[in-house]
Length: 270
Image (cartoon, rainbow, N blue to C red):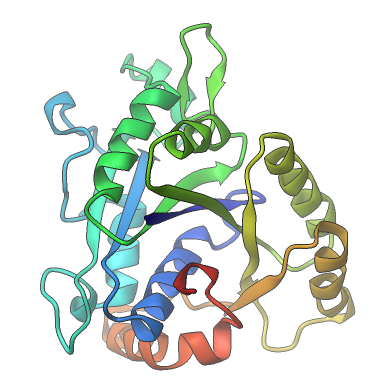
């Protein structure tokens, strides 16, 4: 059984990519024997991938997957070190303008993938690993492609297609900002997933300040009460804003400390 974690956010710029990197680092630390993969089904603001290469293994030199690799550091990819399995990285499609993927595809006059096509790429990658992180774009209902009837393809339709394959366990990790407004956004995302018959395994605050104010402190407990989903991680603000000189420091901090200080539990490691 392969565990597939769809990482989505309440909005753009809430810390999805940094959270994904941190989750991978924490998983490596807690379960170094697991084969871990990362796939970005749709990436914008980056040069397109040739049609013949869609869904093939990539070295992650562009966009969010490149950021994840940079944040993790060399021991997490290319070669296994210290008994840690190397990170495998795949990409789906890339579009040149930094817009919602379906808008970017239309403006670039590139093909739009259906949920079934995205699912085929994701499942192909998942069969090579034990845990696969699937990082979305923006929020849950952002259009990543288009169905035959013209309706938008979102992470919901893709996850439903993936779940239909044998041997695939699917759940969602929701990344949110901790301040005012997050209760409504988290509740809406949770409700849509429930409506679609999909499970949310945890909520993570992607930018947790060193001195959270009263609403932030209260929101952590309140969102759990409203949704019944636990807050399982709080990623310190500014973690993603590091230069190359500090990169090794961040990498060591992630591997050694993330599961103990930033995360309370990793449901996919049970």
